[in-house]
Amino acid sequence: MGSAHTTPITLAVNGEPHTVTIDNRTSLLDLLRERLGLTGTKKGCDHGQCGACTVLIGGRRANACLALAVTCDGAEVTTVEGLVGPGDADLHPLQAAFIRHDAFQCGYCTPGQLCSAVGMLTEPGPSAVTDDLMASPPLTPGEIRERMSGNLCRCGAYVNIVRAISAVAEAPAQ
Amino acid sequence: MKAFSYARASDTRAAVGEYHPGTAYLGGGTNLVDLMRLGVLAPDRVVDVTRATSDSIENSPDGGLLIGAAVRNSDLATSRAVRQRYPLLARAVLDGASGQIRNMATVGGNLLQRTRCPYFQDVSMPCNKRLPGSGCQARAPGADTENLAILGHSAACVATNPSDMAVALTALGARVRVTGPDGERSVPMPGLHRLPGGSPQRDTSLEPGELITAVELPPPLPGRSAYRKVRGRASFAFALVSVAAVLRTGPDGTVSDCKLALGGVAHAPWRCHSAERTVVTLPATRDSFIRATDEELRQARPLPGNEYKVTLARNLIVGVLGELAR
Image (cartoon, rainbow over all chains, first blue to last red; front, side):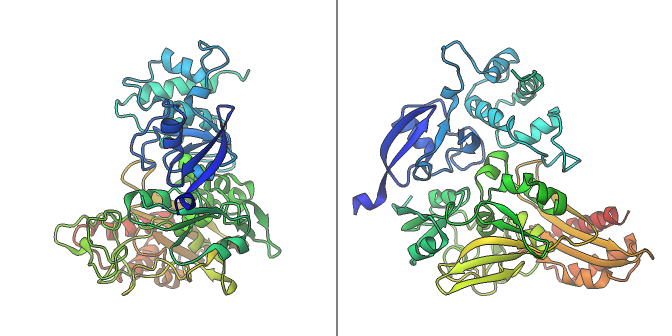
């Protein structure tokens, strides 16, 4: 009976392949934190309401608490640990911008904010606050707030989070 | 969470073949996984159907669109065809949830998401939907009824359907294609969802094992359309009341066609047949819209604590129709 409730899966996390046998109940979040030792991704509400657990699955931002790890067999997952470049000091532009703009206080929501912002900057098209539905509008502060509404910050660092993301969104593409 | 076995179905037939009582089909998981964690649902088998149905949006021969059940909500909302020809649908989807959840959630799963009634989600409370015959805590004195129904509810259940997309699909006259052990059929919206009556444990008219495979959109209706949602905060919240409206006026300034559906007010998306019938042929004026809306909302039976929804629905419909008539 035991093996009916477990499944071997292989997934790539930050480019590194892992093969693990997991209890089918395991969330991607718990797999990352408890089995793979990647504790950068945070558990906030565990209900998909706070965004602290945001990671990229196949390049798209998602709540790792709501993803069963067993559904991620074959997936490519990027966590906050994977945002840095090859050198430890080689921060992602968003990480550097968060520091420069003082975009956090306690820092607990920050990994989720960062992964969410990385995913958000690649998402095309309008949002709920865009007037022209056919447009891919410039990322004004209002657009950023709407697009980041899945990430809560109990310290209320929103003003500087928006500034940090704006700075990267406006920077010319490399 | 109760232990369960897991299978990933590669096609629709395999998915339906995997079904037995106690099985849950899994789409994006944004609602099912949460309900399993809360103990509200405890399937002994989970069948991942995200690869079992189409994840593409295609033109259909009649000039409509065929949307695969595995299409992610974010892909639906950013589809050029949907934005261009069914802006009402794109708006409704963009108004729902967060960027992360729209990336995960599928069209099929969105339609089958469960109510956010606080008593359904709390296993320590009686709930006829979760445990038939246990009672309805939302009927108890002092209950939190803010998000609950004002239309079509029963003594057994006052829950509301939380989907924004379903409200838009109802106004657009979409059909939902399903495959089950007995073959394929298609269900017109809002007929997928049912009113609670004496069996609130059933959200939909689907039979055990039936799987949503696609949504069929008819050719776009002529006229102007809008989706307007009122919620407790500016983003990432369920509707208190929402309205999907399509309005067409003739050269003489009278209403020649109107489709209206409400969200957040009933156990199913609420198609406003009475208001539609009343307003067609009337001048497209505020007075006509008020008359039609009042005709619809005469049926409203608010609960203690959610009387505000009747006023809100009235103002919302009248306001949106007024803007569409300009």
